Amino acid sequence: MSDKILLVDDELTLLETLAFNLRAAGYQVVTAGDGAAALEQARAEAPDLVVLDLMLPELDGLTVCRSLRQHSDVPILILTARTGELDKIVGLESGADDYLTKPFSLGELQARIRALLRRAGSAQASDELRANDLWLNLVSRRAFLEGKELVLSPKEFSLLAELMRHQGAVLSRDLLLTRVWGYDFYGDTRTVDVHVRWLREKIEQDASRPVRIMTVRGIGYRFEG
Image (cartoon, rainbow, N blue to C red; front, side, top):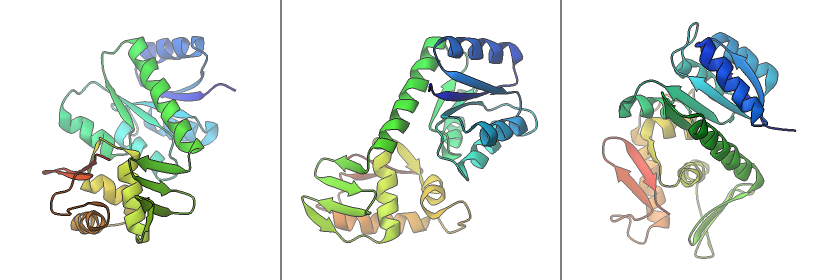
């Protein structure tokens, strides 16, 4: 069976054009023209990937994205006419995996879709995360550094796994709170800082001069491996 894509956009011409071309490329495609319909289609169709416009009637794309993330890890590619960095950060913090700025080429869209589906398939196929001499077993929830097992709390393990899954990407404190502590957690973002400090003490040679978990001032953290 080919991968199923949920395509969400209120511009009918664009929606039909993209749907036609993605079907021609071998994908199954279901469509929605507003945010409420997108959530209904996602529940009914269980897509392998969602291509989601931000500017939607009924419910905007960010709200749809957050709602999907409450019960699904489906890859989400956001389409946006906004080019500002803040808008892109907000989209990623809402749970999106990637974004594409309008106007875009069909070739670029298909390349992004292939990359997200490949990444999702690799994540499902692998029970481990590795970065040089640091590796995590996601099934047993055990962590090893230079062959020696680390003693990590459940939240430390989940935080490290989230950082390693997105190696090289900047993850904000709010996003980490959402992904690791959950959507119903209303704690202070300093909770993230404290757990990062504890992790650094366990995986860095010098916790005061980290080379694995880097601070991005004013935003959050980036895992370098």
